[in-house]
Amino acid sequence: MDLSRAAAAAADATDPLAGFRSRFTGTDDDGPDLLLYLDGNSLGRLPTETPAAVARVVEQEWGQGLVGSWRDWVQQSRRIGDVLAEGVLGAQPGEVLVGDTTSVDLYKLLVAAADARPGRDVLVCCADDFPTDRYIVAGVAQARGMTVREVAAHIDTGLDLDVLAGALDERVAVVVLSQVAYRSGALIDIAEVTRLAREAGALVVWDLSHAAGAVPADLTAAGADLAVGCTYKYLNGGPGAPAFLYVRRELQEQLRQPIWGWFGQRDQFAMGTAYDPADGVDRFAVGTPPVLAMAAVEVGARLTAEAGIERLAAKGQALTELVIALADEWLTGDGVTVASPREAARRGSHVSLAHPQAWQLTQALIDRGVVPDFRTPDRLRLGPAPLYTRFVDVWDAMARLRTVLADRAHEAYPVERARVT
Image 1 (cartoon, helix red, strand yellow):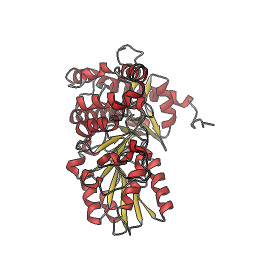
Image 2 (spheres, rainbow, N blue to C red; image 1 turned 135 degrees about the vertical axis):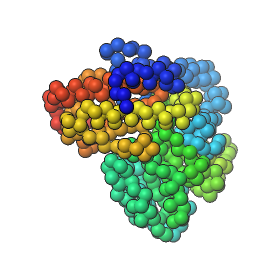
Image 3 (spheres, rainbow, N blue to C red; image 1 turned 60 degrees about the horizontal axis):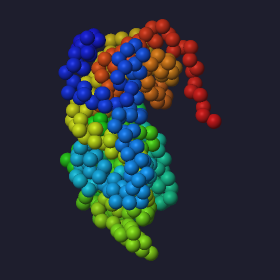
Image 4 (cartoon, rainbow, N blue to C red; image 1 turned 180 degrees about the horizontal axis):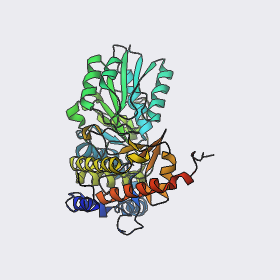
């Protein structure tokens, strides 16, 4: 593999997604002060179309249309959901809804799924999964008198399917897992996990937060039951953007979610005294959607669908391959090891590098115009989002990391993270 900067520039010259870069802010300066943003797996860049889209809602739809604009606003959740379903998630129209937070959506689907498996008293999750997922599983289990069965996973290579299979039996009601591990980027097979769970009679709720917009989920082809995910990472919906949920069509009429809000009511404006859930995926709505935030999500969702998830995944693999190759070539002598699966088919669109002083390295890079991410205990996380990250951006970022290590510049930074008070 040619690891020269010229080779990286050549890859950019033939990149079929290269034109999308100019549709994001902060990407037009190509000088030495260019910010090398490798944290797209935490918060995506701002699309250039988003400010005008939000302003249109504020100035025209709200400012002039006032309450009359609700004719359009009430369609947002389903309209954006259909864009994500067909263009990003490999699902069907009418299976995806946008509106609440990832945590709220996970709670709704987890409780609904547990109710659909009466007589079963175990919830399964991964011991190394994102904290909010584990907290919600624990909270639901405590409230319902159920048991949590946490399955061990390797911090770098992820969950072993044989270990998962050993945790599944006739007591398991629901399994909660992430398609892409938040720390290492390890990718798990949705179809195979679904098959294992189905053989045990359990349902699976997937967290697609670190996958959606970067790797294919193919929910219909995989036979997936339920899923949730955020829109502010690879989908570029903005900080705190509303999340999405997915419910397989065959399950929609079988499940009743626990938060009975008026947007999930069959005829919400009848103001009836009794709750009667709407048909289809609409029954999983709760309250008034965040209209302004949804306008931003729609821009990001449409951009991602336009780019095509298969092309995004291919470029994401190539970018992360370059990270790994440069780390092996330049950084091993400085104590850096690759802490993500090396096989591209088992990795999402981010790479973790392990180093005893990862926190200090993160701060040193930020001060040198490279934005990575830190994850405990000692991981430097690099997320080159394929919609707008170039191969030369990755090369330059890794070169700056090499310089920091060679100069031992990171040792001047505090060893511990500052605590927020």
